[in-house]
Picture 1 (cartoon, rainbow, N blue to C red):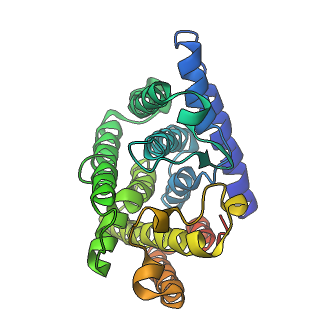
Picture 2 (cartoon, one colour):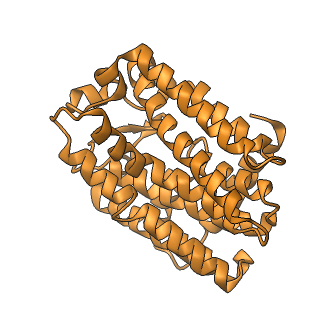
Length: 292
């Protein structure tokens, strides 16, 4: 990760820390919200917001709010994904999952609160977004996080448990469950700009689709090759749950080749934009080369 991305990572942490302070929130609920949101994470979605915003000359103050909102939604999704009714995981980012650390009801409510906080953050006057940008970004986030995006992907993932999917069905699950929010981060970062052409937006959308799918392919590879200590979550969980994965369907080496092809396609999309895409290029490489 280059120095500016490291600085933006720290910047996002500070914004989130400030956002998750409230004397009006019941302390136990606030503790649960902070526990999952401020835990060690890659902040990939936030960094993609910043990267797309820098590529389209968007003001950092606008990007701060959008990056924080996307991280709140991501944290909510992880809390709910780990619940006993979903994947029933007890480890996330190297520590106990939210429902283990607190309890199941508190975890559900913490996720609910983070989701609604995301939209409160987007619509706040402090976001410095114009009314038009608030409408467009909120609509994009809702679509990509909702029933046709991330939530839709989650139910597809649940319904696929114990079944053997074909490659097209598996891709549909991952483009929704994982890829949709990554795509939202890139597009919404660009929508913070006052000067983003339709051609640039389309190139960024193509970039995001490839990075989003590559992220999940690499996730499947790491579930086979990595360790629980390195990942900060249980390895082999997909196999235990009887879920289809890319290594299971096409083999480990072909999965690695697929990830590389998706990376190259993402880079080709950036080439259509021109300047100011170095940070997005670094993030795409980070997705492919990551060890956790």
